[in-house]
Amino acid sequence: MFHPMMMRRVRISSLRRRRILASALLLAALACAALPGVSQASKRISGPGYSTILPNGWRVSTSRSAGLHQLRAYAPRTTVKLLTIGVTVISARTLARQAGVKRLPSSPERLLQLVAKTPSGAAGAQVRTTPRPVRLARASGAWEVLEYILNSQFDVVQTNIVTRRHGRVYWVEMEVDKLVQADGTAAMDPLRSHWRWG
Image (cartoon, rainbow, N blue to C red):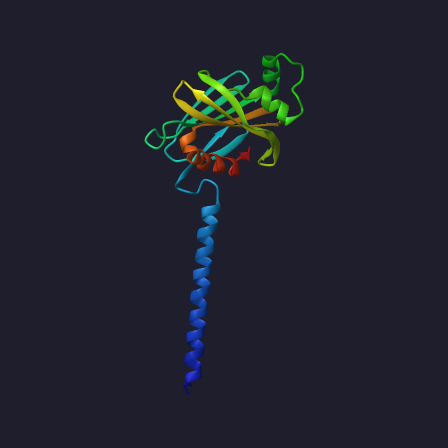
């Protein structure tokens, strides 16, 4: 014999199943969004011993020579006038030879001063943030922020990050027009958080 309480139990059970299914779908969507490289708004880039992401639409060029690998990425000109990110990977031996030293400094802050440079055409360079400790995917490093005028046209903010791992020195730099510094931060932060050693 059918009882009204039976109908109520069926309705409650069905409602619970729907809630559980909705929660599972939401968790799956969040997990996919959190995975590196899954977002349609980014693309993965890589070089010797590392990989990370950049926003879609950026133009990327690379160059190689003995003990040196350089990657430079350019934001679409339709978005900003000046926004570039570079990743330079150089062997510790090559860098020591170029610097004319027998051994590279163990301090990341001193290594940063040895590696990081401003581009040709930069004038009036000033240190906005002195070298400070930072981590890049758990590797100890240092970062600093500089300001200068580039080619008498752009008021540039340059962020430098340097770290050392497995006989290589990694230098990440960002140059951005001060007027659109927020766009640079929006690109640099995911690059750092999605950095992986390979």
